[in-house]
Structures are given as C-alpha cells and as structure tokens.
Image (cartoon, rainbow, N blue to C red; front, top):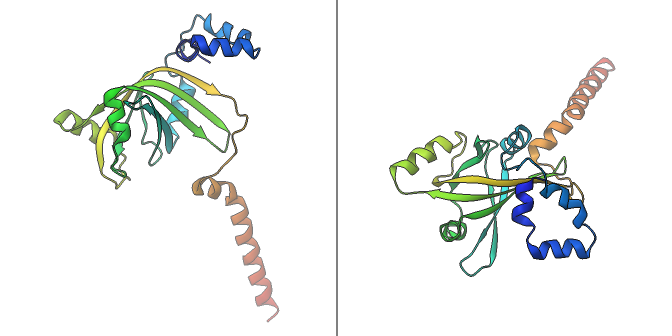
Amino acid sequence: MSRRFAELAFTPLVKEEQKAHGSRHLYERVEDSPDPGNRLGLDEQAFIRERDGFYMASVMETGWPYIQFRGGHIGFIHVLDDRTLGFADLRGNRQYISTANLKHDDRVALFFMDYPTQSRLKVLGRAKIYEGDAEAEKLVDSLRVLEEKTPAERAVMIHVEAFDWNCQQHITPRYSEAELAKILEPMRRRLEMLEAENKQLRNSIQ
C-alpha cells in the first residue's frame, strides 16, 4: 500500500475501526513511508495496459456512490504517464450518470481486475471530461482503439492521486473466452493429433 493511498483512505473513523479490530499497527508503518506512492510504477502500468475493462466509482450530487463498468478492447485504457490515464468513452445506454457525476465531483475510484491471477489494483484519482470541441475531438482520436466500432462520445483523463494492490483473498478466478482458448490450446492440439491418428487407423483397416 502506498502512503498517499493511506492518507486519502484512512480517515479518522477508519482509524478508529482499525484500532477497534486490532489492525491499526499494521498500517501505521505505511503512513510513515518516505515514498509517497502517488506515481504508477512499471508493474502498475503494465497491469492496466493489459486490461479489457475496469470499474469506476463516482459520487452523485445527492452523495450516493455510483459504480459503472467501462470495457473495450485490450489497450483501450491508456497509460499516458505515471500519473495520467485516459480513455475514449464509448456510447452506452445514454443515461450519462457517471458523466454528470464527474462534472459535479471529479473524484473517482477505479478497480482493475485480473480474475485468472486473482489480482486487483485500486486507483484513486481525479477525472476530467473533454467533449464538444476541437481539443476533445483530437483527444478522442488519439485514445480510440482501431478495432472498436462503437462511437466514442468524449475523452476522459484521470489524474492519479494514489494506488493500492489488494490481497487475492476472496477473488474467484474467472476466464474470458480468449483466456480459456489460450489455456486449452495444448489440449486442442492434442485432440487434433489423436483425431488424425484415428483417421489413419480407420483407413488402414478398411
């Protein structure tokens, strides 16, 4: 855990809960770290670039939290530098809840998940929307993935404030079609070989 993440997440009430449940001493060392931990390292950057989706939490005008999934082809979320993420926001169900939330309060929490390895990266940041002008159009063009056919309505840039890797406990492994295909490829080749051998045997006894 980074020092900056602890500064943002460990409010006085959170610290009281940690004290009450006996975990406060585990996190005090993090808060004294000389490294602020507000810049994405090479491992974090590589992990984000390999994702085909993430969860984004924002805050409504009423104070209610709101979580939305953002997905696309691998590479749709761009790591522009160690403190900046960006993506072209694709047209969805046109409710625009997250869009409105970010114009009211720019704070976001992002969850990047790798279910096969049970890995989870949390990022806290501030988001800025670019839409409706030449600058926005240029940004959208630079962030779009060529394979994506869904229209992009805006660009979203996120300034990273802090990050934290979560433990693997309780993350159930799940696999996409592409991930399963890779895992099953040796079995597929083996089956093809056996089918070819069976065909040769059948032909030899005819």
